[in-house]
Length: 272
Length: 285
Image 1: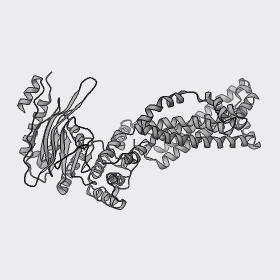
Image 2: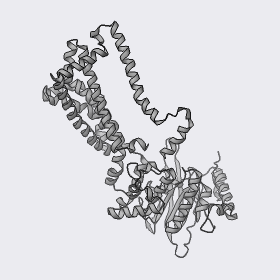
Image 3: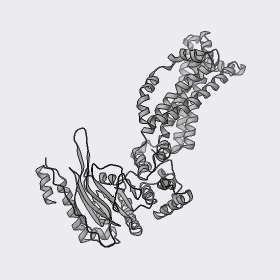
Image 4: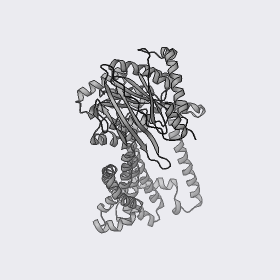
């Protein structure tokens, strides 16, 4: 069906058709071109502006190189990454499990959804003082913060996904005589997987924010703490180098999630 | 029929139409009996009477089509038959026992085929057998058997979305046949297919029906399709959705599309049905 639907559309605009190889090259070349344009503009602007304010691509690169070579950020990086992935593992798993529960039981959903929505709309950093009260200025507080911030998108997407599984799929299961449990296991849960992935992608990127903010507020270790440190010391090159690392971690997360989806749930991209 | 049409033109609600339940031919008893089925969908602006007092019998082993314009309730009737909707009034009996909420002895073929994309073709066909707790080995064997029947054994392990629309609907038919239903309910199954594919599938379904002897209730708004396939055609009209008449299709079998279209009886039937549905369906304002 999907092939039949997309075929004629593609033929309708033949002048816009790009051969596959070209499209792949475009996907690599275009972002690189944009990146070099930005870097170029940055470098030029740096000639006229105080280095403390914006540093420069060269400055950032050499700071990054120095930090990595001397190993000044290795310890911080290791702590941050460990806390990030521990928090993500808990947050994403809890989001999927509780999302299934809320998506499955309309009663529970109607009871809890106001609170879930309220919590989701709250800037969670306001809870940090509370977290510190509970578990102290500790790794636990930072992990907990990553858990909190990555949990909600997964929860909401999973719960919504269960409720939005195509009615047609559900009816197929019903007329074939599947029991409620079979319907859940064989139709509704697999049907909600695309939504779960959307939530997990969001959550795994947000987790990086949680990691940084948590460390900026709650610690004297980790990448977030170093960000504070370099910021206060006007070491803009180092600061932006760390920002770059954080961004790369977020990108890596999303790429891994996409990879998992493509490898084991390839139908998601093709079947719609 | 004429009275009813006059009633509709006067704007009053037509009297309930009782189409006689046919005396069964020897050895061809009643398979499905509808008695006084009513269904109303309350809407925001207007309430739609989808079905008004529908009473008729589907004979064992026959190919019966439900034909009528959009909104005449034919799909609703099929959905009620398999428990996807619940009738407000009336009863439905399968082989003499009254049903509530569908039956494992019936299978459904949808217009939107909705093969599950996370399952291979053969696993889609096995779904109904899993519901019936058929052991794994037997399940696979039976699924492969029906796939062979519809000519798709060679794509059993392919993902369904790699198949053409026509092939997908063959899988849809195989999925329904795998549970060995007594009644096959088909809801405009070929409505989304191109003409050539549709005609090929019509021939296939006619052959399958003759081979398996399954009772088929077939919803369509394609008059030629109904004439080609059916033993009898039930005509439905909208506002309120109602059964007005059941007509016999006395054409020899096996049929081919060419023979049927050229047959004098088929031509008469066609113009009768088109006239009946086209004129009768228009609602006086």
